[in-house]
Length: 330
Image (cartoon, rainbow, N blue to C red; front, side):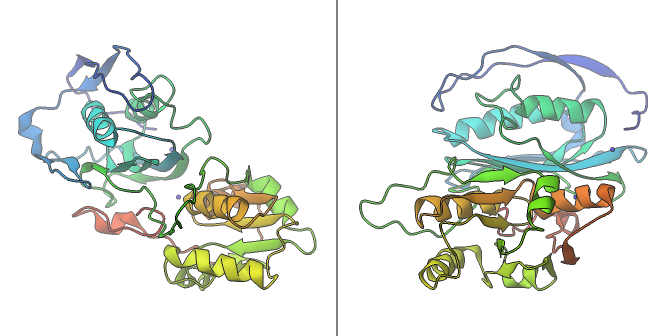
């Protein structure tokens, strides 16, 4: 927020069937074999499919995960145009079923994907990373711009996700931006420069840095970077009017670098694009992997500019059902 060995279990080689569909470019055709534990109907309690704009593919294993395993928590996202989210949802669901013990939630929308997982350390983790990487089952590399945000390694008896859910949604991050007639949609690929934690730490020590906390007020109240200005929003959708007012009142100087941060980085993609393309900020800089990544770096570096606690919407509390959503997920 890393392996250990599996008990001796019967393995078989599962050959991956190739699905063909279009999402703006041809689906990568590559029949690959993977060593995996067999998944039979006896150890899957339910596999469900719903329809509509928020359709779900899910299953919940009935066989408890091996108590000697350790689980890697990780998350990642990528904003990338997807013309057929339902096809991506189905392909991912079928592929992830081949990875024993993987549980978590993936959102697929026309603007990209957003995923959070708990997966056994070892071969299963490597299979998961391969699934979303450049040699995986998607027509794009989910990690092309950023590696996954690797969180804690926890024992398997720690409450995490209790099922795998792959859901289509209208957005991977609901923003509430209202476009006027004739306005072009914002380009999420043009959101400024991401800084690694070490560079971020060094640059924040300069004088007169314009630093803005893009989280909600209940998050900022628990902790923030030294000298950061909170936006004091209740929800993410309030961000845009606040930023408009900040520029109008000269609280933000668009001709000077503007530094922004959030919990995991995804909100800064949209905030950065808005600052650049809507408000004319020339130089926007965000923190790669957000506060979570900075805290991981600061712990190793034994130095920090962070004051207080990092508010985390802890998914492990919601293991009995689909996790509720924070602004970073919805």
